Amino acid sequence: MTDHDDAASRSQLKYINEQEQEQQLKDLANLHGRNILLVFLFALLAMAVMGYHPGLEDDAVYLTAVKADLNPVLYPHDSDFFRIQSQATVFDKCIAGFIRLTHIPVAFTELLFQFVSIFLILLGCWLIARILFAEQWVQWAGVALTAAMMTLPVAGTALYLADQHLHPRNTATALVLLAVSRIMSGRNWQAVPLLLLAFLLHPIMAALGISFCFFLAMAMLKPVHPWLRSLRGSLVAAVPLGWVFESPTPVWHRALQTRGYYFLYTWTWYEWLGALAPLILFGLLWRIARQRGETMLARFTLAVFSYGLFQQAVAMIVLKSPALERLTPMQPMRFLHLIYYFLTLIGGCLLGKYLLKTNAWRWAAFLIVTNTGMFVSQVALYPGTDHLELPGIPSSNPWLQSFDWIRANTPTNAYFAMDPNYLAAPGEDYHSFRAIAERSQLADMIKDPSLVTQVPELGPAWEMQVNATAGWQRFQLEDFERLKAKLGVGWVIVSYPQPRGLACPWHNDSLTVCEIP
Image (cartoon, rainbow, N blue to C red; front, top):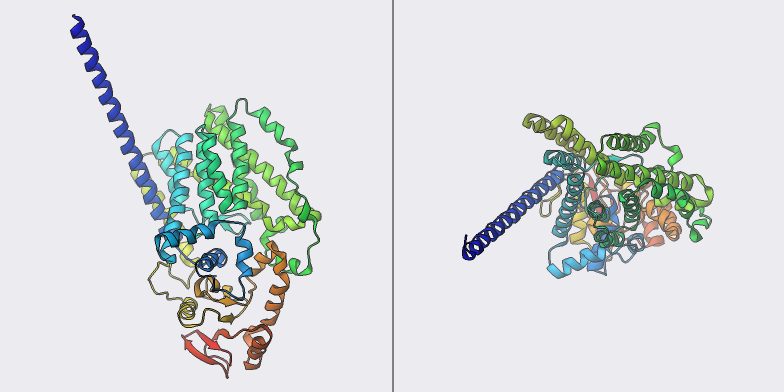
């Protein structure tokens, strides 16, 4: 063979290798494209199952803060009941900034960011699953179960895996899960900006995520055990100082007592089971995975087990010590939120590996049973409201109809009073008046107490206002006039037909919006 032929042969071989590499890159891109599409479809399914309820519960703070950022003249009478808490996060500023930049209406922006948060949560779950398990159907079984169980209650914490409305906890959780996947891939520094952004959005949940990532990073080192044993003394460092030891006021205690789930030692047996059983399961799974030589799964489950034991010990110390009572509203048992995500993800993966496998009928039954069961439970949980409260679709809920009318037909400085327990009224389904009506209101007895436990200086105003509206169902004209004279309230929402003497420009079959003369 001549030198010319040899050179031609090498050139041809190089060309073939380049073609093969190019084809491999195309195949990889197509594979990733299909995976992203599957995550997208599971996110759509998750939204359809869990429902969408803007203005629900914690939106009393976050959605209200977004609207106040966009229109500072709103809420002239009660802004402290959401602004002080929202100062701990940049979430509302980011959403408001996006709206100003894109001119997308608030309702559509909330829906978009809610979907993106759910998508990123499931993307993080898939990235974790593909590191732990080689089989693709196993990975997707974990993602599928997590998508179906987004509204799984986390034992004793008053949390779901994901909220049915846009919440910084959803977004922060997504960032934490993505950070976990980066650490498991050996790219620890890529996790840092994700955790930092999560902290800016939701400090408490991000702090718990950072704690887990620390345990995970230790578990990924070789050897593992000396590092984990070195953490024994960390409990001492977990006890903060300063404001924690300030004496709580009676008003603060009154607000605290409205949150029974804060008190670990009054939990029922099944709440304790929900807290401890996942730790036991992860401890057993760690031993089994180690015996089988499944190194990555063993390290991951060891990190979950160690994190859970550490945080459980911290919670029991904090919630037992009277000197640390001011830490109660920090809800240290919320560490279970992340553990429940891992429990659902790993449980789904194991279900796929040992039961579903590649059997189409088993997969069909699995998807139908899990998604239908959770869908039915969510519809039953909010019976007075459409399952998907999408922008532009009129609500059939009489409370939301009244809120919509108020937003469109009353002055922006209007100050409203209503039943302090209105959130728990039949058919109201815990929708926030502030978030939806965009008007000021007197403090309530359902949501506002949680703000008082975190911001004690709100206590005197909260107590005065809820005392002023005590016995609301018996109020007559003179009681409403007293509210107006004492607190400056000019408008009320009452049952229809209304008490005599009120000027009422709107009503439906259940409620009346009235102006106090």
